[in-house]
Image 1: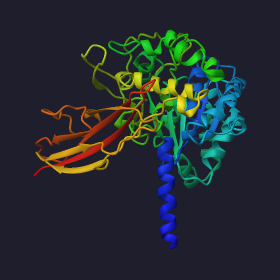
Image 2: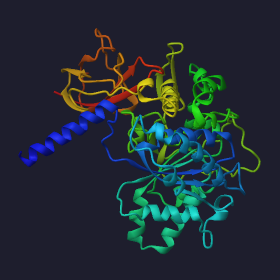
Image 3: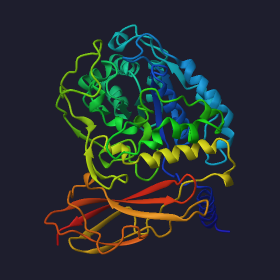
Image 4: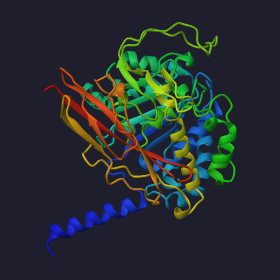
Length: 475
């Protein structure tokens, strides 16, 4: 048989097999390295458990214990190890549902620690640590993929790595390493984050800057906002869907003390769900939406008053990816809301159901659990049309690995595109799998983002997305 035919058949079989098992991820895995002030608050443990249920989607490069404003003189790598020991017990069962879950020993080898010192006190000559040296080693790998660094606490271990690169590598070598860095910090939990932004203005950085948490996007993860779904982030929901009767990893999930998983937005947009696009924070996703600009220092009152020992906020000196607002029609009361936190809480029910399903994967056989649908786009994810032209958004070919019935919903994401008006879908219902749309009348080229949301009718119901970017040109 012709060699090319054999290769084609093997490829087709591989794609068919992965479709049957729900394994549709074909893009290269993201490289992810976590910094966590675990033990400063129960929410780091919560976030680590969720992180591990998705760790098959990434190449995990490091799990580094650090300090923060809440834990200045202690690092707790042993607490990461304790969670990994629970993961070890369930990893074989997780692997029945999706491929790629790393072995316990592999993840254990990635556990490192920074210095038990606060902020910039641990940056400079003589302040290398196991964690900072590991970060350099990861960046210097012969791998051109970016390294995504979700920072759940203080950032000084990363700052030390960057400081050493600057002082021990040539400018050209250093710039190549800086270009790989993708940072998302949960607010500023030490003074090393502002130092990085000020000293290295070209490093990719996502943050709600400052120490006053009340002005942060990540609060949308679990805090109660008007019309946000608070039921699915309650201790009662967590007890039923995560903690009790769901195996050792679920049992390790602690009760909420201050807020559920405040650190999770730092990696939530790295999950491959068809909506998230990490290199484009302005597109919006489960971890929020962010725009690139120079933020103005906000000294107004916050719902979280600044503590006496917190550093003083300083004006930013460079643009960064930071807070942006979404306008959302709430499913709770059908009213409109606009806020930075809405860029996260608008997806709350969907990311909570997804987590609940993955916790079920830790104990259930494949045929007794739910798996996400596999959306398809008949006309591709980029289209170019003329002003006033009729075109079709089609989800033809969408499947569900469990054979579940599915619901479709098309909606426009106006903040993500350059056309900020609203497209009128009338007279068609938005829950059609094939939706005719008339392009708006424009006098200059614009882009419009349409989102396909596919939700199965399994338990819990799971959602996946496709994004279609339509370029509309004037006639």
